[in-house]
Length: 531
Image (cartoon, rainbow, N blue to C red):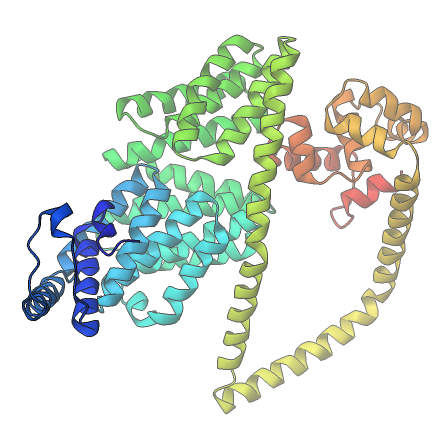
């Protein structure tokens, strides 16, 4: 490139100064005499001594200029506020870019607060984008480098625990998520403002309900209604904004638990009313829920209208999980309208987007597991710093071992029986997979094909005969559910196949357990498998 070629490129002021500085240094060090053909360029050439002095003068001026371009704390704080605004507007990618820039600038001037806020923003934005591996990375950096600052900042501590809990839920570590949210509850109890404290408590109770919903429905319902009882009694704009989310959850609760479509639609309409009142960007959630209800009412065209209102909003704000669900609802509507080309189009979008999301999620599981193991290891080492505590722990462990050994003698027979049953089920499972009809019957199940149940009866006639003898009043829907369990579909897979939530699958299983009088100690899948 020509020595002055950089002037033809676009540069920021700082980069431009750096380029000039580098050029002047080059001239000073090598003492190169610039020659120009005066006949062609019609320019005056300075003598070498004068050009040397000029280049040195340029070098000194630019050094002074660059030293004046130091980042200030005020500028960094402004960038952090801009990053908050971008996050609030769902512009997470732009916010991440700005936060990285802010972190670098803060590091150059040793501005601790700027580094902390920038790293937390990066953890928060990556969590919202679904990059849980990157989110956990910044959380770990914060906890490792700034433990004292976190301990002395209530808001920061609560926010970090909230993001950790959300990451755990997304990666399938539900019990760890519960622990983080319960820690968050103890932190926010120190908030002085009563309204802010209640608003935060309501949010954490909702998060606990979400985490418990994967393995303990009673606790999930308890925390959900506890959150609702708090939020509905707060007379504040923030409470109304939070209430619209509660209405969506209440709608889902009545729809899935009681099949009460009227109540479900009432709460969704209330949520949409509040979203329109405050011109809220989260309106896509209410539109999506309304589309789902209209589909259940067989108002397929109206359902599509709401879907296509919600879809561009989810794309704009990168709400991939909602986008995936909308593709499924759209595909189902077109299937009901017998527009099969469009049904297949949106089904393909549903599958490809879901697969992409799953691959991103799986990439974060292993690092998250390593973090959890490292945290446990650290806690274990710290517990042995005090010799007295070590002795107590050893005594407790010895007592526990003795207790387990005594009780183990009584439980040995039950364990052997349970292992035998599991072995029988595993053997049946192996035989089932070896059967030539396995791919056919599971394929019919996954596509929710009407032929699935009749075909299953043909293949496993003894299963249905035994069920009819045990429970003559069983419905075809319940038979289909039990057939899916017999084929070893997981709770999540059954929810996707039957277009209901995981909570509804759990509810169905509990109801069937009661009607079939299955002992609470007996595994439902094992019981079905033995039929």
